[in-house]
Structure formats: C-alpha cells, structure tokens
Amino acid sequence: MKPSPPRVRADLRFQFIAWAKQHGHNPVTGAESFVREMDLQNTALESIARDMGMKPGPEVREALCRDLAALAGESDIAVQFPPIYEYASRRGGRFRYSLMLVIAEDCVQWTARVWREMAYLGVIVGRGGGVRANYTRLARMAIEDELERASPRFVLH
Image 1 (spheres, rainbow, N blue to C red):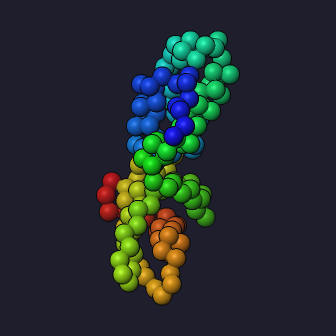
Image 2 (image 1 turned 180 degrees about the vertical axis):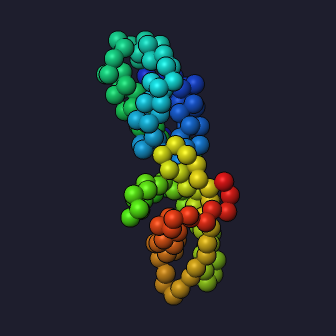
Image 3 (image 1 turned 60 degrees about the vertical axis):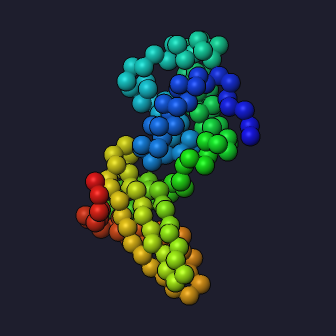
C-alpha cells in the first residue's frame, strides 16, 4: 500500500472522499471539482496552504488537486469507489453514472446511480442476457439508451 499524500490533512481527505462518493466521482475525476467548490464556498485555502507549507495562490489549488487525485492510487481508498462512466447524450446532456452488476447463471441485473454535474438524478435499473454477452457493455448500452430519452425513467430520486 502506498503512503498517503503527506501534505493533505486527514480530515480533508475524509471530507473529500465523502464528497466524491456523494457526487458520483472517484478521486481522479472529482479533485478539481471539489477544490473549485471549496473556492466557491469561501473555504479558507490559506490554512490548507499553510498545512502544505505553501503560500496561498493557484499553485496551492493545483497541488491540492494533484494530492487528492493521487488518493486513487491507494488501494484502501480505490476499492471504496465503483467505476464511474461519463456519457454525453445527443440532446446535449452530460451524465456520470456508477454501475453495479449482479450476474446470474443466464442473465445480468444492473443498477446505475446517475448524476448531471452536481445533481443526483436517481437510479436506472434493468436486466438482460444473451449467449456470451459482455454484461458490462450490455448494461451500459441500455443505460445510455435510457439517458437519451427526453425524460429518463428513474426508479428513485
């Protein structure tokens, strides 16, 4: 196991991990958005800069993004995040979704949690099967077809 980035406080790590899970990101895709949101909330990056041994400024944001994204390389952190897929619909919507598969003997059931920007939209569920089917590809095609609809059918908001 790789050691954690030394410059990121433990409480900030936990805050970031909780935020990333809530908003459908993993550390790599969420670091920049998290730091940007901290700026918008006027969270004091000065104290983070001091903790990192740096002067406040754009370099602190960049270093913080790098250190938070590096958490994805830690096995104990990485296993906490399901794969996150991005999808841009023909209607112009940009979505992120996590995918969970339950594989049975002759079929697969899927559950996808869907976000648009920072908004959680809900869950898309389905099932399918076929001889020698690539179940991940089958599920992703069905989910992305649903996201093409004017009003996707979510089972939970």
